Every structure is written in structure tokens, then in C-alpha cells.
Length: 98
Image 1: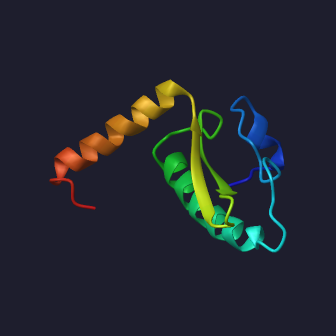
Image 2 (image 1 turned 45 degrees about the vertical axis):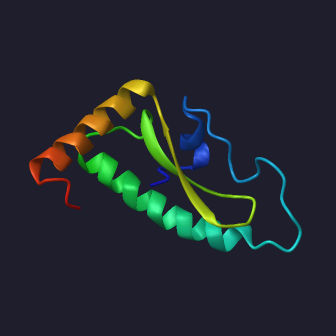
């Protein structure tokens, strides 16, 4: 879900990239980031499928200090409110079952 280039990551939502913070020698950050990237791409496809624009809400792959994959949600508050309403409606509609 990267679009035509990596510039989509900085189109208004300031999100630190993988080069943010300190890296420890010997930690495999790439493996964790790849796993997070797959999950972030899946969530971004789902967000697009329900009408969100990735310029207002998107999942971003990252890692923690131990190299474990982390998916962060970067969004404007209005988009988060809309996403929360969709999730709440889904939970109310079927008793919260996933």
C-alpha cells in the first residue's frame, strides 16, 4: 500500500520512520519490520475498502527496541473517531465476536 513511492508516509501525518531512535548492534530489525509491514498493508487495504483515504488514517510498520514488529496507527482525530464508530457498530451488530 505504498502508492507510487515512499513519500506517502509524510503527506501530512508526521510518522517517524524505521530510522527513528536508536538501533542496537546485533538486533534483526528487518525481520520484525517485514512482519509488521505485511500486517500494516493488510490493515491499509481494509481501511481503503471501507472508504478511508490513507492520507488521513493508515497503518505504519515499525519495530520496537528489541526488533519485534510493531504496527502503529497514524491518523487525524476525525478519522480515528470514524474508525472507532465502525468498530463499535461491528461489535454491537454481532455481540462483539470477531
